[in-house]
Length: 373
Image (tube, rainbow, N blue to C red; front, side):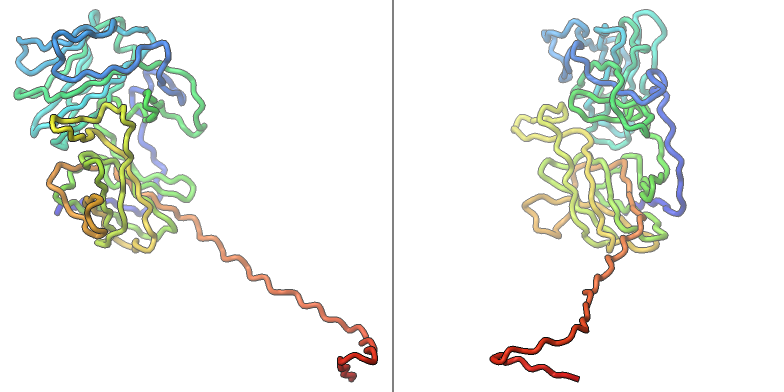
């Protein structure tokens, strides 16, 4: 059993530093968004057929035979001098392998965009990379190079983006990237580098504590733990998962008790992450978001453990099991609210009105009885 721990002891207002890429574009909160005048998204399956027609901005992909490592060259001429290129690569990681990405401009010095695009999960994966216009220049070649055995790339999606001022919260300072599917992400998450370890952050009475930022394979069982000194009033677990079969869900175990399930978000059916094999079986390659409301009664002061298993609709409740299929999670966070519980409403007692008015003399046929002092 692998164990991963996080300590939750003191308030920390330290925020992760902005990605260096953000400074290339803007110093304020802006968004990179689809521009209607730019070419639409393009998806290429690899290997690329020799007779495939490509758009004007993309030369025909080539696999140079004289390279010592498997290589894919993608000649690119930006359709607009101010456009950035967002690429999403679907690939399979191999043990001790790598996938590096370079930009070789037709005029200028080659630029290493990612020394190793792998995340260390050793399974099917997808990642996005944003290439700013200052790097693209007028034209060049995007070079993907992999291990000696195989490149391992199955699909590439291209999308041209342009910057524009957008309506954002005044508390947001990072540059945001919004492709055509509407899934806005921070620019630092698509800079081609490994994710930066995060620290606990407070917003008012809410603390967000990273349990793990790095991807972790969990199909054989992994125990995460967090030290909680003071119990919160409410709590939430959020994560990204990859490898879970469509139609399956994650079972959440807190302190060895089944707490409930997470059904990750299902992307739109136009998403390039859907793959259908020859038997018409469909799977999804990529990271999907999931979250879970934690019953406060399951938490305790001290060390709390968190585990995940899988189940589908054919399994009875409580029958969560580990799977042999590759399964990974990353960006696992525990969010807790320490706002004081509301005071119970005061009980309003009825008001009694006492009267000392003199009694009236009853009519002759009345059955009332008057008792005088």
